Amino acid sequence: MHLWLIDLDIGPAHFERYLDNEERNRAGRMLDAAGSRRFVTARGCLRKIVGDYLTFDARSIAFRYGIVGKPEIAHPSSGLRFNLSHSGHLALLALTWQSDIGVDIEPLKPRSNMLPIVRKILGVNSYEALATMPEPERTVRFIEWWTTLEARAKCDGKGVFSQIDNRRPAVNFEPESGWIAAVAIANGIPAISQWVTHRVAEHVLWH
Image (cartoon, rainbow, N blue to C red):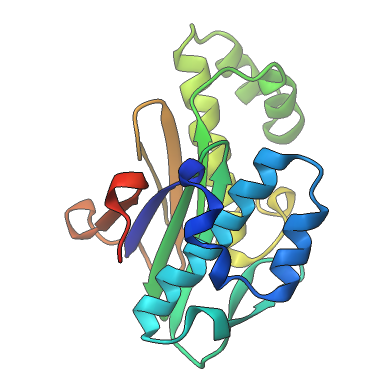
């Protein structure tokens, strides 16, 4: 498993050339300028990384999408699997071979709706357990649970609320101080010592 942590505020100039017409049009329709720039960076960086793994022109990669929008590589034919999550200025890209994968990343900050969400989805017992936790433990536990739920759902390519009882192998980790992430892999998660991690930021761009 390879993980790439991407700073989306690098700027789109490095990556816009890798996008296809549909992606450029999608970015152009976005009303939020910062969101548009980060979308271009995320998609262009995704294409560049996948292209490097496959030794294939990043601009010629074609994606297909599942019933809830999960992308996978349609062309060229490959056993490479990936999943991308982004929140704020960070994105996390996870890749593996021959096994479905899902990933999620979230900033470690309180949410006003944490307790109502837990009560609705997990029931009264889980709600009461979370409600009695002091901060910041409550926020940490909620985000660990939420990112795990998202990662498992994305691994299966299904909606998050259909995955409450999903028991795909998943693990939480801290990709950067102040952030929590989770990864789920259908065939099991390798030991952390075997993870290969990279960082894409302004000062570590490839040529």
